[in-house]
Image 1 (tube, rainbow, N blue to C red):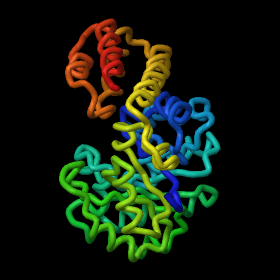
Image 2 (image 1 turned 180 degrees about the vertical axis):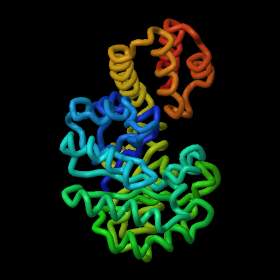
Image 3 (image 1 turned 180 degrees about the horizontal axis):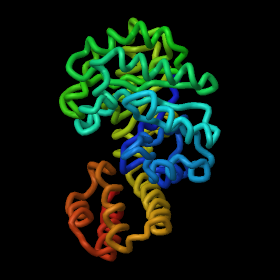
Image 4 (image 1 turned 90 degrees about the vertical axis):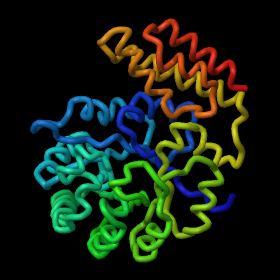
Length: 316
């Protein structure tokens, strides 16, 4: 495949934390940039787990761009003081999160119907932190796809490093089809480097998008990489891992993440078990269903480990 595009690993809260990113980079690779799940202010303070997740000590040997979500310049400034303290040169502003609890308070995609608020937020970021390369992640809109088009003059005028567009509406969350015509309308009018995000699960999916949109500056993949952690590597190498190779690498990934959580978590066996169950939510969707069911239902770590061994042994 010619002209391979950079692959960026989209963040998913509860899945792509520092432990996962470190292990993924070492065992699977193929990723140019990892994004942190968004840092946010809650009850007047930055959440401690967010601060820990982006600490440079926990993100060695990877290119991490911290993502932030804020409903106003004041909250953005609070988060940016943490990022600048850690000497980050880049930050991604989330205007795409579709979760209703945040969106109804004009966070993420919930801000898209309010272009003046978007302008205030982005202008404050650019003016107050000229040393930071800001990017923006957004959706087509909250209610309709004209909302992102209305923002194009602003986005084109600002010195943004790049824009990531997920072609769904916020109110869709992750349901329904992506709207490629909506994406195309934005793509045609966008002067900034534009990255595509949404429903990329296979090399074939990637080819369809890159052929239709040849000017793309990169691809951003979240759930597709959680399901197949080798996807970026396979895209680069032009070949798929065999089931045996995949099982061996997933075992390494699981061991690395498990060991990190075992070291970090203070809540005993049940907390570790709950954390590890989420590891399998997207991973190997075609894996043995019986073993997956045991993984999700068991209340004992020993049964969990046996089910993981059984799942990986059957993945041939």
